[in-house]
Amino acid sequence: MKDQIHYQRVAEVPGLVLSAGRLSEFHFDRHYHLDYHIGLVSEGVQRQKFRGSSVLLGPGSIVLMPPGEIHDGTGEGCDAYTLKTFRLPVELLNQVTEELSGSSREPVLVGTMIEDTLRAAHLVHLHDAMHAGEKASPLALQSEWLSLLEFVFTQSRAIKPQDIKSSLSPRQFQRIKEYCVAHLSQKISLEELAAICGLGQFHFLRQFKQSIGMTPHAWLVRLRLEYACALLCKNPQSIADVALMVGFYDQSHFNRAFRQAFGVAPSSY
Image 1 (cartoon, rainbow, N blue to C red):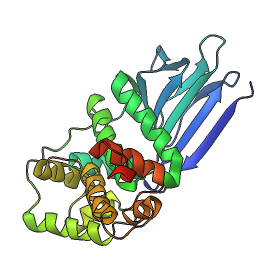
Image 2 (tube, one colour):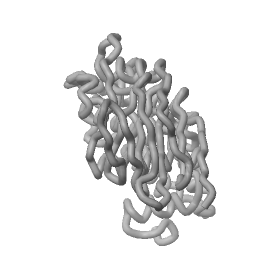
Image 3 (cartoon, helix red, strand yellow):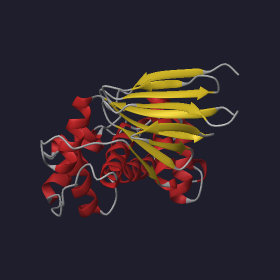
């Protein structure tokens, strides 16, 4: 099998670059990066050597490789493996860690591997969703991205996340609702909603969930579905048109979300 490696920028997270490779013959010689790497192997096994240790990276493992850390990478055995990587430039890394920790001090970062099957699966899913591009929800991607980075950096003890106990005010929540209703057919980002409240994205995520009891994305999906119900009860129109009017990128996505919420397809409502 011919080795394949692809790189892709992510519009929802400016500066972030994804890489994905299916490798059997290619070997990463000893090298380093100027950016921060979060790496996962979704299939097969890769052996890496760094900081005097040799580790096996397979499904369920997350490897964190800061700038300047010298390491290598090669397939273990004769089978191919699939490597997925998030590549964060230093500027984006500092922005994210300051948002999470509330401190402008650069974190002390070292190469390490975390064994966590659930979180690794979430990161693989996020990588795939970001790779899907236009069909993905910016709000969902950005929210999941920050939440997973909080976990990864906390587990590696690179940062200590802020303890946020405050909630959104009724006025802030009302402004969020008004904005979402006015832009229901459009893509809505975490950055937009946080800016309405005058908060950073991490603070907004925490405060919204503490106030409402749902993530912003879950709440917005429900809002779209509730408006869809109202539209389905009005003048006859196609389900595809209703899906677009409430912000679903295609009818199949709308059908799945509707059935999951109400137990029936939109055509049966």
